Length: 287
Image (cartoon, rainbow, N blue to C red; front, top):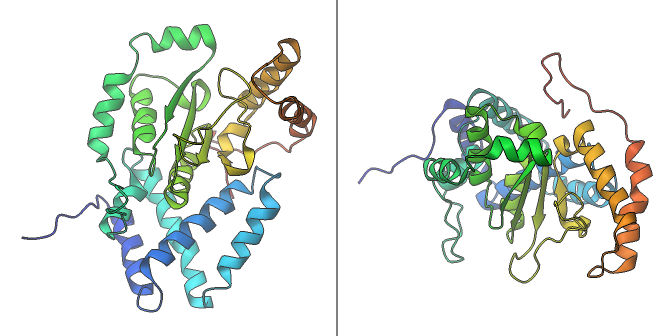
């Protein structure tokens, strides 16, 4: 029986071709994992200055594993991903490549939900009164506690566009996955699509992501949290600022005092962050 391809466009095929070429010298899984982590770090370090030093050290340690030829291929792969997602955002771009390369952990129960199924789920679960909720609360939140490469969240973002909802200003995306590499895949895709929010790496059952505020704007375990660049845009920075100010007014009995204080203290530093650069079309520039 002929193999059914998971790929949908030429950019995905270009990425697969490069990885298969490089796999003659290096482990295909290690190549993929290192590329994904390096790409996630490159994006994260443009905005998350607190975690940047440690992540930059991790980045440089990965670079040492490869020869110059291989390292020069990584930016070309990322360029194909950026272009591919720009041309066709309505799919799980990285997840489909991941499955095409047979990198899924079947023994660990890792099976990515097909994007078309995620799109159906997103449409079914979209509240009929979502516009009214946004008008009342300024934004709504969507969470995937076993996000994989982020197909469900991507589908929700695309569903929002179909219903004239600006997900970049009106939706907070939060995700969690126990697998570091797939969590980074989700982070890359949410970042490139301009989804504001964060991805938390950890076990959702034993170590769920906890926020200092009720709306999920202020996650506490920031070392394992990957914030998307859009989460640092003006509208979301202001919302986080007000959330921190509200912590001063209402005591939070369930949280440790020092954690609350740390969350509040960072307000001034964040307000001094340089403005993000946008293109003439309003698209956030990452590099």
